[in-house]
Amino acid sequence: MKHHAFGRMPFTVTNVGFGAWQIGGSWGDISEADGGAALNAALDAGMTFIDTADVYGDGRSEKIIADVLKTRGGERPMVATKAGRRLNPHVAEGYSKANLEGFIDRSLTNLAVDSLDLVQLHCPPREVLYQPEVFEALDALQQAGKIKGYGVSVEKVEDGLKAIEYPGVVSIQIIYNIFRQRPDHLFFQEARRRNVAIIARVPLASGLLSGKITRETHFANDDHRNFNRNGEAFDVGETFAGVPFEVGLQAVEEVRKLVPQGATMAAFALRWILMAEAVTVVIPGARNGEQAKANAAAADLAPLSADVMAATREIYERLIAPHVHQRW
Image (cartoon, rainbow, N blue to C red):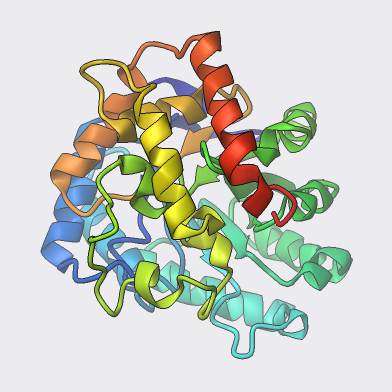
């Protein structure tokens, strides 16, 4: 794995990090022991970036991270969390300084730290991005020492472009993978120009790009790939990257032909993301230690050729873009 400066912040992170949504919940039954083992394996492999959120398992993910890091001791990785999705209803009016501070205080307790490395607004309603007072509140919380920096996790490219207009925004988290290629058209160039860190999430399109999912794959009732297939619980773009399931399976078979001998499709899909120089860190999740180690090893694959990159673009434009390109 390569190491990058995390935008304008005084952190250096590996280009493959650990996405901790799976160990929190909404991905079927994953025990705390398995979640801890996955995180330990990721850290043993050298990963220095962990991404979580206060709503992943209602704090379970944050607490597992705290327990693992306390047990390990030594130098800590950078830990990014998120705030805002605890609001019910999740509306722009809820993004007050009092509410944000309450969410941050809860994460400070869950993560057992005095200051959060990074807090990200968790895919807020678009109106929030037009409320300077929200970002002034984050500035005040940073000055108070409760957070070291802040960013925004977004669903849409346009929201990312708006968010980085605020000088205090140091990072954007956005979906970017073989099935969601639009961020590299304009957004990445703007982010690089402003030295904004990019966290690439949903890198395997909820497992589709692992190549292991078939029409017969069964998803548990508490797995978002079952209950959010049509966006019933949150933005449908978070599940299978918003690609209709059958279309995704068809595209996977074409991508499979491009995977080099000896590599897994998952590793290939992660290496594809790392071809984008604007990406600071990609955050695949893991259910167990073996998956975490495999994610780290993906960074060791040789760079993909121009022909292969062109082939992935052709598959995207022909099969996937009509369903996702203008939506996100």
